[in-house]
Image (cartoon, rainbow, N blue to C red; front, side):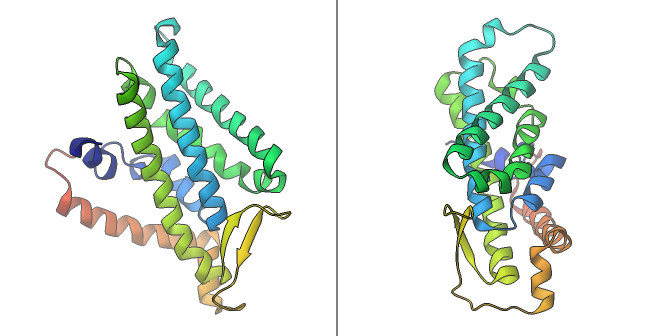
Length: 210
């Protein structure tokens, strides 16, 4: 992955912080590490499947309405992912349905479809994978912070309840720490992360923003 692409994905116009669905995804999907890992896999699946579809069938897409068609394509890929997840972990699919629903919104809203047109297959997959991994890894990082403080656990997908939880930190946590597991705590944490992100972006981002 070239340095220019890394800069754009982390600090420039491809960052998930630029899009409203990106912020929503970071909040909704980061309550548990297990859910964050499922969403990370969903991001890679949807972005890469869309890249393959655009590369193989873009010549058949109508000239007008391509953005709408790409949104339907991303939604179909997310639906297929949920169907496969349902066959493996039914409760896990139910628990992450709302979070995974933000993935096609983020994919389509980022304008990925138009940026994939005309690229070779390796370049299209590289771009898609980079964007998916950055968004997914951010979700996982926030989950690694929220779940131990809020639930005193770390979890993985699987098991009869959809997640397998480990409790290396004990069973109870203080009330103000449990707030991090809720939406209000997630928004507060996201606000701090955005502040740090803007500070780091001003320091490390190349001139021109992308």
